[in-house]
Image (cartoon, rainbow, N blue to C red; front, side, top):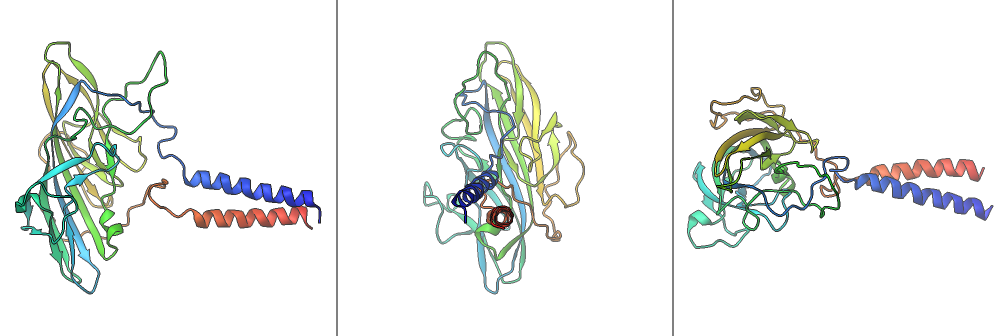
Length: 318
């Protein structure tokens, strides 16, 4: 057996493994807009609320619980989470036996709240959340994507205010016995020009919170365009003009799964907030193939290595 051929075969397999692994851990934002590490914005989110309606089925043979998360991270900078207050729940929520984050007081309204769901039961609940004290605590000017410092000169892009994304059916990963049948979220926010004296400002404002694999069903005012920077999300985007000190209100609605029947995106009017009485057909949402979602690329790697090994053996050792 020629030792040189063995070395060539081993190097080929290592190179193939490295290449395939790199594909599996590909950056989901590659070839998209580059977001720089800006420090402030002329506009500020002064108010943010969300009304969520979900239908969940318990597929287990014993009782299960689920609760409202009062801390939103999504794809935000780890230093800029959004803290929520529960405004109301329907049906009335229960105080949970333990909390995810330390409550600021002993009041029930500031504790973790949730619901009991019996074996085989399908339960629909609705609740309203309000960002406290502002949409982001440490950097309240804007919600942004984590990025590197700018090394570009002399011209740079102005992409506007960024969105953040999350998986609506994350409850299924936390507890496989709970099946999220449907999810609907209606969001409202105000944005204000912080400068009261200087000229008007303009730019792009994206929906601050966007569910992945969901359909944008409503917006007011009507969106200027749907941003596809993230391939798995229909991110609402508005071209905004703000005069000195001016505030503007925006609202939008998403639903999951996308197969649910709905109207096209419409501007103006009001969005339906009725709690669905029947469960929609189950649809499994596809998960974006990023290095953070845990999608198993191992099978593809093993298969590729096996094929490459066979070809290498046939070429060098026969």
